[in-house]
Length: 193
Image 1 (tube, rainbow, N blue to C red):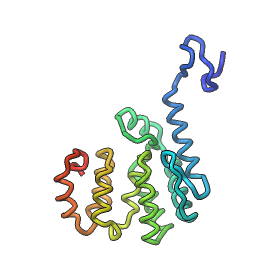
Image 2: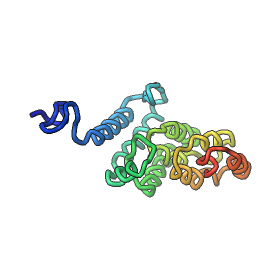
Image 3: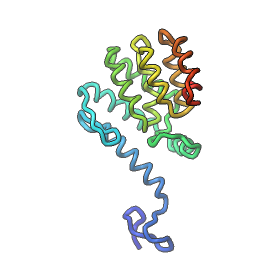
Image 4: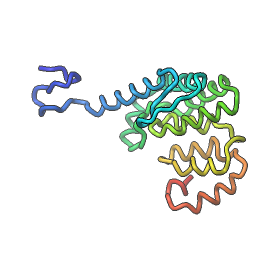
């Protein structure tokens, strides 16, 4: 008899099926997520490679390591079962993400670098924690109305929409004009935002 993770069939199961295959897939996704965090100055997002300044990449790596340190498998599984649209769910509590981002703000300091790191995290649509942390990192003074509208049009869940509004959008200049633009949108999640 073969070991189930070695790819050999287990006795009593059809050839080629593995027990807990979904669990293994989630573990592999998390491994690839972390592997991209540990690579020197490049990371991959759906096959496209991006190169960043080494110090900014180090900040992203540290934030992702903290997400991994605060992961909670029970919460992650509950979110997956509830239909969360993200591929990578660490299950971090919002309170932990607030702490992670406040430490990152102290480390980074420069508003331009904060905005760059936050934008890179927002672009990582596969990770729930990155999408939650990005609005906490982005300086409200640097958020333009067009960029805010672009972020709102990329919303994939009500959790992300609530966090974006509470942590960032209510603090930007021109939030009233943004509200009027969003309320006229067709997509329900954009209108919800």
